[in-house]
Length: 316
Ligand SMILES: Nc1ncnc2c1ncn2[C@@H]1O[C@H](COP(=O)(O)OP(=O)(O)O)[C@@H](O)[C@H]1O
Ligand SMILES: [Mg+2]
Image (cartoon, rainbow, N blue to C red; front, side):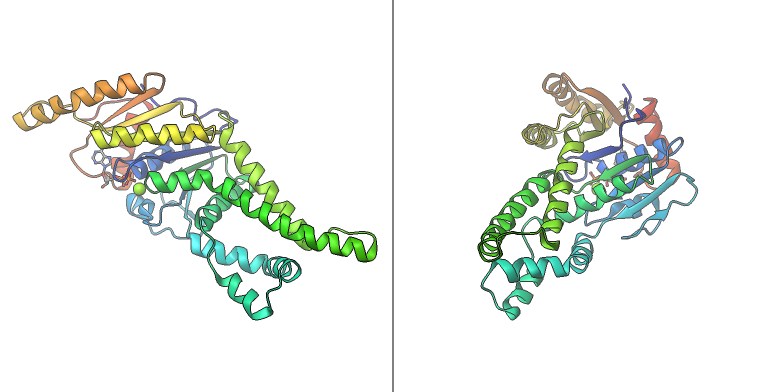
């Protein structure tokens, strides 16, 4: 089978996830290359290892760059720390005012607090960056390459974390609002409220797009090995908790050749795992990708992977 449905007009966001080293980056980049034949496409890496640069053999970094030789493809590697600094600078006044009006902390403590990291904030910032791009709407398709499983899940759960943070902040404000109302008889929404409402809207937008199968697809990548299969089972079950349902699965590194005794044994060793994948992930559209003789690097080998994913051509 081949990957299906990615050309649907409504589908904007395609996220690749899975265990480390199974081929997420290669498949994400090959998919982006395929989509870029027709659609203006942006590939976004949220993996701190930023292997999209290596895969495409072009330096990318935390700014959108055009990919040489592929007219409709651009790429960016999100650096969560930098995204957070940008956010803090942009909203410094609102964040400070939130703490000044809702806590008994003095100025020095508040400044210190603003420099502290909030757990999960990296993923929130990465996801916010993705959503901001989608909302700007400059591209027709957004392909996201994630770091290994844990990171992808933290990315997916980031709206919930942010929502909790907003609720705490809103509670802190409630006391302040009560005080103002008691003294002056009325309360007018201020810039902190606007800031919190804006964040709340971001959370809703992220959640809505993630759960909407017509706008977002999460594609897990697996290989025919025990650990990768159990990690994929866990990943799909955890995604289910966030109401994200995968529709297709890439099975990478499948051995096709049995010309030498080594290949014969490896291939025989993969068979039970391929059967297990078929049984366990029965409902998913499964796309098998053969193992290539060389690593996947540069446009020529990516084009071969692309035809495996979209035309299901066997290349070796
Ligand atoms: N089908 C394949 N055949 C040969 N090498 C592959 C294949 N898929 C991925 N690779 C290679 O395996 C390594 C890990 O792939 P990568 O896409 O970076 O995985 P991940 O992003 O999941 O860590 C890379 O060197 C890549 O070129
Ligand atoms: Mg990778």
